Length: 182
Image: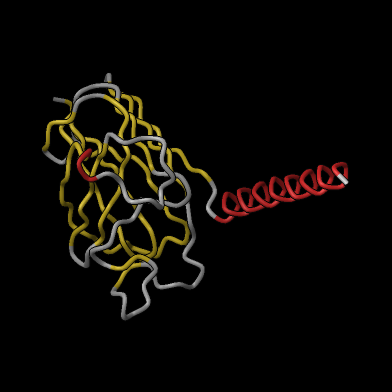
């Protein structure tokens, strides 16, 4: 009798592990990992995030419009794990002083601006809202309309004079966050 119970528990545990591995693989294949890197002029930055696709959905808009990411609601700035940015030295992040380090990076989208936040809480699954008391910085950047729609969410770096822009693009939306060495 005990042997049958142990075999049943073993099979159940095995199925749970296989199910978890499948779901984890499925999520990663639907929104593969991405890394944006910048390393010039004595400044290194790296952003680790996941890259969901539009797939015919309305990405930004109101809840009533059925938007995937409604205006005014927390977004992990990607998919899967929380998006993290690592900066090698003290900078001005959209004009705000920011110490070197690694931070969780998230957004609250709006029709004309995005609120971008950096938070000291690391290692959490991205879907979970952060502990807002651990926000290090909040800043607002304007929304631009991209020249052409971007199917897969992308974060990249772009040089602009003495500054480096963190460019986030998805669907027909583009935001640029200026970073400058202080």
